[in-house]
Picture: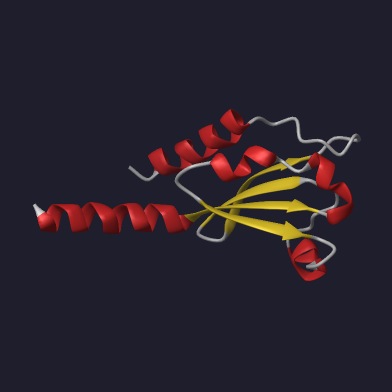
Length: 107
């Protein structure tokens, strides 16, 4: 039983570390932060303030904030960008569905 539990924890750890969600925003745009990003499951979540990390902004070619990028094994899978009002139209469900599809595609 312990071996099975350890195996499941190991496998879930691999899945968890493979998918990363990066939420880019700027301090001047805090009112448009995507508050629900922290509620996403089965992924590692990173928050980046582009004013404090311009190299990451450049690396990921972020031209508007907020921007949310989903990566698998470091490769970009999907990106959502704000509209002209600096707000993301995508919902938590949209992004969670993308994460879930990535996980299921591995099986």
